[in-house]
Length: 255
Image (cartoon, rainbow, N blue to C red):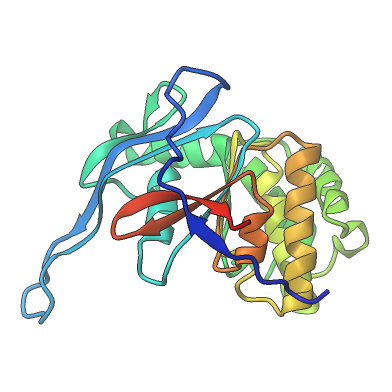
């Protein structure tokens, strides 16, 4: 399928959904600031990616975040997943304040509540696809047989039921990314975070993977935040936000 270009126009009239009003809020960021201090001897001084950034994601939403390279999109996802801590501000998942997590609590939060898909699959090459998908369950102490049964179900959900015994190097790029998607969802997380999940794929394979993400989002009632450079894919999400000059701006499709 050929990619079709979708144009967006700025919409200053879009307002953030008030916290606690309307649909149930799953994830929210309040006054989020991320500044990297200057490195001794470096030409560039401190780098401020964003300051005072707010974000609300409600149950069942599929939210796309777009923006230029270097705008801070991946860093924002890292903060939402408790992979990093903000300079100021806070991220809440339910009533939990992510910045207060210890390293162990952050790891448990990611294993329990967050499914994360990277641009690169990061599969462990010495293990089969089935074993790779089962890893998050094994890490939380689930028995091997039960973990493999659940992993097999999710491999079926991404269309790879017959490829479970293949190792990473025996899979195509699209298949590897499907395995990483199954791995992200095997623990049935509250939130799916995807950082350029089709960025390493050709257009045809990327289309197939995005359609799969979209289908799983709907079929399983997921709450998803997806970073993408593909405006066509972004335009198929419930909301599109652009990270620009340290702010999230709501976008709407041009008439």
